[in-house]
Image (cartoon, rainbow, N blue to C red):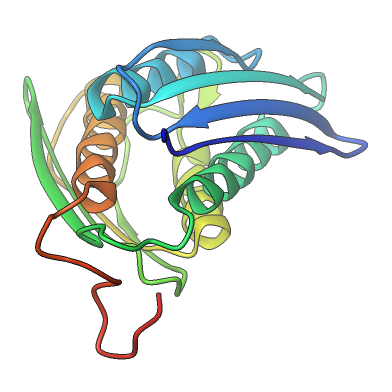
Length: 195
């Protein structure tokens, strides 16, 4: 059975509907109202082999903060729910991803304990309609809502578009690895017996 979930979240700032299938083929249908964020989520879906449907209506007349942060919250919740009891998964995943001059490292532990370590400085303040300072806010929201330990490092870069895209794709590849099954793991990969 595919690990799939549907999450909705409605506040006075955003209205979000998301379907995530961790065992997909990389199909996506994304509309957040922020074109570059759509592009990043489509890349996340494609390179992680996740099926993602995401529709966001946010208060973009204010700025992009609520839309980006709340989309991260909902994606994190969807990841947590789709993982279920986590039996048989590898738990850990990491990926080093190059994109032209940029090199991004992402490492994940699906431990149930939220933590974000994010080291990236972008030369541009915006890429398209996305404020680059919101990239960290997005991944903070994902990590805490999903209950994952998430480390992101920008090892080299010069073009903000390339840097952010490398981060999203590295995250997708690391999550695909961490959420994947290993036949040797018959329960959860923890001496405590729970994740």
